[in-house]
Structures are given as structure tokens and as C-alpha cells.
Figure 1: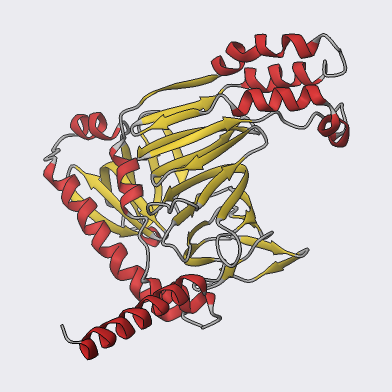
Figure 2: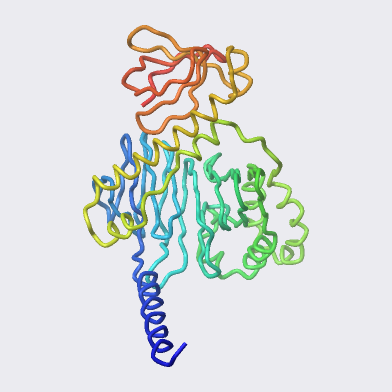
Length: 369
């Protein structure tokens, strides 16, 4: 390579790398709405803000899905689905000077798919009693019993750390100044619980009770010597084990699709891209539903007994035209419902359904929306 070509190569390389760095550094913080159905409320600075596809959620926003669902995507391609009756606040977002995304869940259920995180990047789900650190994975995160989390990992791993909840009896500032409290918190941080692929973990109510017992004794000088004795008791309040993935969980995960990164970047830069996001997400969702339908069809389930065994549920879907499908709802995204029945596999709009009867429990529900 002659000298001119060599310098030309250096210039092209420098420009290319500069553009790449510029693209990364200009990544604005925000969560972009890529799917929305039902009633969802977002509060910002004490006011409710309207949502549509392409809307950008910011730090300190509080989301209440009520009976709706919401899919969000970050500039780095992480996707989060908020299920009905989820209450979540955005504590921090990756971008600008921050390497951390932190979501505080008060109640409800999340389904999360993340890309592989960079060495510096952090993605956390926080509750009053635990912090879950993501390590490039797909998982569900549910808050049960008011403050206690339940995590199921489908791919990769999640590291959970317990934390002592702020006591309602002792003021938070007094706890923060107490060295015994710091020792307790350090003890919890040192006992990270790693949840690997196909494992689930649930924090039992005994943890909250035990933590409150310890907190109430913080002013006792003797507690400094006995904190260590609580180690085994605290760890035992987390129940962890393997689980077998339900095919409906797999279908739900499959339909959590991400849209083109340029559309996310454009939305974060205040462009109105509602139609473009709807088109892109709709096309990818149809591909995902095709795959779920293909997997369901490959099982060759012809009887109610076979369907019940495979899906762990048996339902009768009563349509407005008075026809009835006996089988199971494989998945539902927005108004689209995929039903595996003894008559075959059907893709229905919820407007076609009058009600669904759960044969297992003989309970009639309202139509799904």
C-alpha cells in the first residue's frame, strides 16, 4: 500500500469511527412506546400525559397500565412489556452521562428482553425489598405480596440482591445514620442470589418480617454482634428452583418484538413516527405470531385432553356468531388472540369473542380485551 492510499485509509477509518462514536454518544435517554392497548396512564410532574406510538417516557415518569398493556424500547434495543395493573416509576435511564437504567416496580408484572449489556452498562429492576441486576437476558419480573418479587429467567441470568426495607417505625434518616443498619445492608449485598436460565426465585413473606425484626432492634448495641447470625435466615427466605417453561410463556416472549433502531432514534429526537412504528411493529408481530402458530401446529393436538396437558389449561371460546372453540388461548397481544382448538388454530380479534369459559374451574369470564 503506497503512502497516499495509506493516509486515505486512515482518514476513512477515522471518519467512520467518529460517526459511530457520535451515534452512540448522541443516544438520548428515554423509553419509546412501540405498542399500546387499553387504558394506560403516565404521570409527569403531577400531570397525566397522553400516550401514542412513538411517545417518549422520561426519568421520574410513573406508569400505571390499569387494564392495558404497554411495550417500551430503549435506544440500545432493550424491550420491556408492562402487563395489566402494573405500577412502575423510571428512576434512571441510560444516555447522556448515565450508564444505568433503573425501573422501580411497585406492583405488577414485567416481561423483559435485553441485548447483551456493555461492560459499563447497568440495567436494574428495583422493589422496596430487592434489586435485580440484568446480565443480558430474557426474564419476567412480578411483584407479589405487596413488595416481594418473583423472577423467572428464560435466557441468560439475573443477579438479585435483597435490601432492608425502610422501617415504618424508625425514620429513614435515623436508619441511614445507624452503623448497625449499614452492617445489615452490607450483609445483604454480600449475599447476591444468581438466578440462571430456566430458574425462578421468589422472596417469601418471611423476609419482610425478619428484616423488620432486625430493624426494630437497631438501637440495641447487642445487635451489632448478632447481625451475622441472621445470614442463613435471610438467605433461606428466598425460594429458588428450576421450572418448566409453559408454551404460553414462550409465545408471550416470542411476541415481544423490537422495532427498527432508526425509528427509536428518531422518536428520541422528537420526530413523530407513529405510523412508521405501527407498520414496522405490526409486520414483525405478524411474523412472530406465524412462528407461534407453526410451533403450536407441529404439536398435532387433536383432543381436549391433549390440549389441556400441553397448555395446562382447557377453555371454551364462545364467539358472537354462536360458534364455540374448545382448546386454549395460546397468546393475546392487544386485540389479537391466537387460539389452539380441536378444530385447528385460529387468529381472532377480541371483538369476535363473547366470553371465555375456563373448563378447569367452571368459571365464565368476560371477553378478553
